Image (cartoon, rainbow, N blue to C red; front, side, top):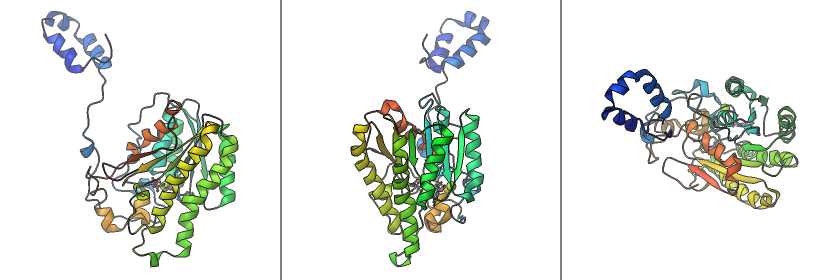
Amino acid sequence: MTNTISRRGVVGGAGAGMLGVAAAAAPAFAKDAQTMTDAAPLQDPSSKYPKPPFERQSQPWPGLASKMNPRPDHGEQSYKGSGRLTGRKALITGGDSGMGRAAAIAFAREGADVAINYLPAEEEDAQDVIKLIKDAGRNGVAIPGDLRDEQFCKQLVERAVESLGGLDIVVNNAARQQTRASILDVSSEDFDATMKTNIYAPFWIIKAALPHLKPGSCIIGTSSEQAADPSPDLYDYAQTKAATTNYVRSLAKQLAPKGIRVNAVAPGPIWTPLQVSGGATMEKLEKFGSMAPMGRPGQPAELGSIYVQLAASDASYATGQVYGAMGGGGLP
Ligand code: NAD
Ligand code: MG
């Protein structure tokens, strides 16, 4: 018998003239049926997670996942690995919360050792992630520091390589997003901080990482629906996401002959600290995700497997691609 047999099929078979046998063998049969049929129940994605309205909430930037209401789901209870990244060594920026944390959990459960970068103010979220990586039996390395600093970006890569014993997956995921109603409200300091975090840091990190990346390695950026459909209040942030999609496509062409793949994930509205620490207005937050056809925001857990797919070596022909997860709206 194969393990594709359905629960209904097994129960139906027992009912048709096998009663005596089934009754005698009931406990063993029930147990076998259980192990043969652990197909996960179908879940309606539109009602799988909380929908708006959400409670108004604000945290000082960069915010903590642990203080959000409801708490985001990063796959802590749900992600199951199957050895897809066994022995890989990954560096993930913004690995403490949101998409970066979902990727860190998924990578570790797929067998990768993972270094995460984050800001010192996020130590609490980061330590939760390190514990989850270690619980998966993998090496988890915490490297706090500010990506707006070129020297730090170089050190970050060197420290990741040293502590992991190499590097073959680089996820440039950290970003700054601060809502400003008008371009007149965007100061030069604001603009500079957004460009440094979202555009310069991946540039510095990739340059530092490249000498360590062997054929078969990969780079993943986190872009956004904002790359193609920018919001009026995200003038500076949205253009950095267009830049992310663009560098992924350019670098994919440049690095394909070297055997290094470069791809991006483009999320729609996702429930993360970015949104509650200045990324969205209170009005937007209350209705967060309501514009998506799914009628709700996504949770980081719903994107973890996408980072895995792009990193896995069986996706060897996928490079220069942008994989969207937007609840039915937008364009990657
Ligand atoms: P998040 O707040 O959980 O993650 C962003 C992380 O960036 C922070 O945890 C922080 O560690 C890091 N960071 C910011 N500035 C930094 C700096 N100067 N130095 C070091 N680290 C810094 O939010 P998230 O939504 O998971 O964001 C992850 C990625 O997803 C970002 O690239 C963001 O643009 C993208 N994204 C988010 C959404 C969304 O709706 N949440 C939608 C599309 C794209
Ligand atoms: Mg964070």
